[in-house]
Image 1 (cartoon, rainbow, N blue to C red):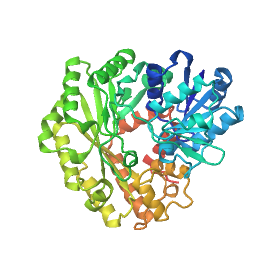
Image 2 (cartoon, rainbow, N blue to C red):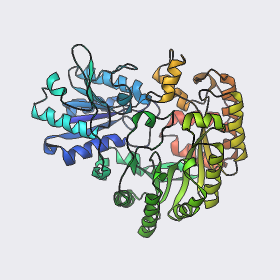
Image 3 (cartoon, rainbow, N blue to C red):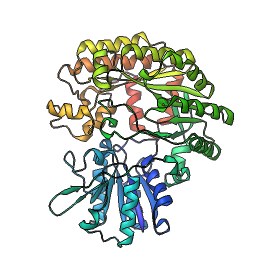
Image 4 (cartoon, rainbow, N blue to C red):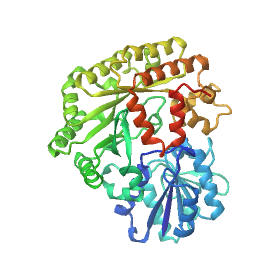
Length: 484
């Protein structure tokens, strides 16, 4: 039996340089725990480095028995288009859906996709059970059989049926890093990318944990509420050593939602990475309000172990807004303390900020502007985004109740995430004017761009012009002040 997974890109012309880990986890889990690993083959069509002509060639040559589509809300329009392409090839082939979108919208109330079965939570165990059942019954799965599977929704004659939630894995070390070979390894591991402005090389993105203990109102984790789980330090270091040796990787992005969630584990990772003498440079994600003065020694250890940058979601310069979207533990004062501690350790501070947050006023915007300006000498770099609601989050429901999602399509959400043009973005709050959000965003972006050395801008252009020409030229025109 043959399964073809489809990994859509957000939209034509924009690509990710991070492989879809979810598909690797599915494949690895089935190969290790499935009943019939020798009876099944897997293949991935990846739109980040392939196009629709490649998909048609794979469909005709590989002749899959099942199509699996991985889908977040930001790629839903492309997923829909690729599903239609598959249906035009074979209208009767079973199509299964997985990923964040189906977890937030198992009944298709927000957006209906033409899939026969969707996985409504973490997919490894429900996927294994589905494949085992599919093979045992030669692909003839009745509604009676499907009703026995947990963690799925499926089409019946009268409605979409959502079964009880499935089990989740507790030990993540089942994933085989050798299964990365299902992706185009040259695209992901042998090309040079920017780790951050001015620092580039062969980069590996890894996950060392799954989940987050916090419930930010703009984040999908506020819906998911799954326990935080970790790969062992042994597994994580073996993965790094494997790719460092195979592809001469020197730069690592630890893409966990919150790498600093378990500080003792971080310290162990650092000590063992130092002992390995791999001389790897790496970056990770932090959260400002979990750092305190007593963490100064940990930050020094991270620096010694090769940590070059910690990325923080500072989001706003307003205490009122921070407490609304991130909870009572978050504050401007704690954001400032995190910046000071990390900057003093010699590690770069990368900040993420949002403008146009629900309930925000112009006064709040000016507070964010002031916070960034006052810390310009300590922030190595920052990104400023226009707030965009995503399905499954508290703020999606809030915006829907406020009537702010009328006539909004998913393509608008993608545009909002990445657009630098005034006419292209939307704001989702009644307390602000679009021109005020844009003018402050423009000011803050130009502030960091003007500060960046010319050699870093040239480096970015040369590294990305062939990989993502549309976005690269868009940024170039933006840098030059050419506006639409």
